[in-house]
Length: 331
Image (cartoon, rainbow, N blue to C red; front, side):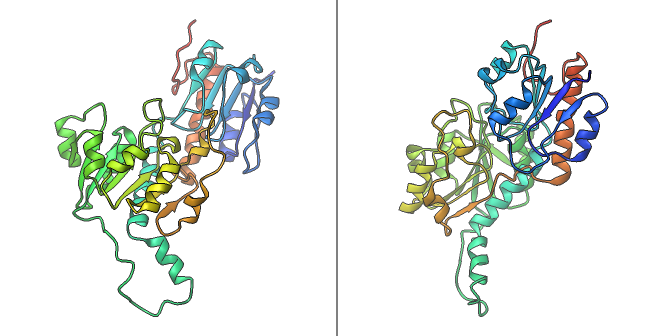
């Protein structure tokens, strides 16, 4: 019998075609995500599982799926998945590390420009039918000659900095690991402490992974230290930001604007995660720019991400170490 592989979310037909010669594929043909219970029922006798951002795997789930050999995540950040539990259960856990940076960098810059230049506010004004030609309104900060601080300088931070090189901005970054002097010079970047970055930047852009040390990195205390009238952009992970504190900072006017493609409600591993985006954030249409986690939503790239996840499954089922493995199994 062919090994059984369950795919929890919709994928391009090419992904199923890659797996089917060697696997029995149980796919989700719908755009809606499967519930945990539905996934568990399908995966109880599965050998492989392809998971996505809305999914969450813990040890209790793994105990119900004793045949699992590999969980392939079609993503890069894997804080919703208990990798240690996978290792204890003898299950490979894999990611796709290198395909998401470019499209997410595009979204980050789109959020930056759209928020700072009040483009959504302008769009809504146009649709009222009251536009009668140019007026001295919706004046904005602009980007040229402003300071932008990037918190985190991994692959995504580098991709963003590369794309901002021609914007005539002062670019700062904070990261525990410094770039080489040559890298900093090429990208026109200067490394500073996190505290200095938030104090002097007109725009703060968050691209750190969600870890114990970055949970609510932006909170009431750090927001108070940010430059008055500055903007905050989060294309990385929702829970790096305390959304309630952001709402208060926007209301007080200390924070001029907030843009995000990710939200606390998405961080399923949190037992205390909020189940909704704060209503005051949704209703604040003049100071916010919110997108529905579309950082990697480029059609061909999403196909390629799932294809790479499928390759990881095939490698594991063939007894090989998958190329995207983030854990190490003995034997």
